[in-house]
Length: 148
Image (cartoon, rainbow, N blue to C red; front, side):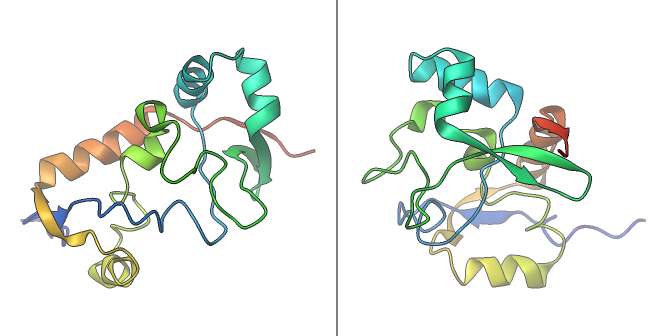
């Protein structure tokens, strides 16, 4: 029988609404085509205007990825005493903390949990729930372009 991932018994998480994942330090909120379309609609903007106003290109090894901008103090551009686009927030935000990078090992998960008061508490997400989040992320590729 193959090794089970550490999260096979499930993981607990309930957002404490502390906004730590939205504020205070630099981070990227990468967007899929679907994310950008939903946000543009939520903001009653054209797709192009949304990209020009709220996004930036972030260099990656072989490409650039589209990300939401941040304020000068590293808050998400849409944070204003809470998420101002909560109903239209990107998949990356909706699936936190169940990201591939966080689920590589128990040690990584535990390190992230030290910074997030909602991890390890509240709702039990089953292995199927967690893998559904990962599957959704895989099904919505990020917007990229060749490096300039």
